[in-house]
Image (tube, rainbow, N blue to C red; front, side, top):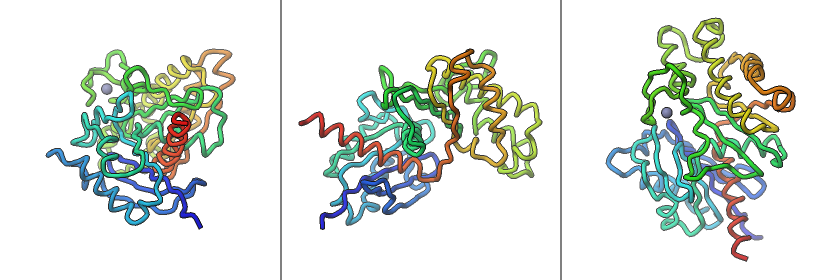
Length: 307
Ligand SMILES: [Zn+2]
């Protein structure tokens, strides 16, 4: 019997490093998780540490792996070979990671921005047609955004398309870790929510929307998210908009309220009456599955281009 071909999907997040081996049929063969604190280092060893964890994880199955994709919460170069900038993990700026990894391993290694891999996973899970634009909005620490056009991820002229969280808001004077002032994700994101929640020191963050959905802060928060999301939807006229991320997955998050606020701002009659909203019910391994699926897709594309 031929050994099974496996795709490695790696998700480097601000809090966890997740690793998975996925079969040709998209089934998870094995996975592992480590805290990101164990990989992040200010002395320049972060890339080497990530590679070490990957190597240990792959173990003897390394011989069956045909391609790997690694998702980073980073700006990635247009050629998808270099990690340009990573605000939340030390030691991952200007790193030629794909090349470093391909020196270690004998199979192709791809890198991609994490939210793009989440959208790839959601599109596959919902079995969506990719003929028309699909937009993904993932509200976590920041506002993650992915744009899919003709089944491909839109990456822009320099690789950094989809930075929706960094749209400026008039009158907002808060400095953003990106270096600019007034970015929307300084006031409408998981980060902003955690800041506001600190005014209720005895409450668990999980109970926030259950107990405080009537607060002025929440009204403003939902409205800002709706304005931001509807702006991009009016530009792209997507067939489907997928809403996800840790904030939206929180207990009692007002999903219907957010959708009705977004619809308020959508252009009549389209996309107001045509767009379909879906929620991403992602499991913790969504980034791993998205990465493995993208590795398979890019490997096939690479093989076709060399025939
Ligand atoms: Zn910013």
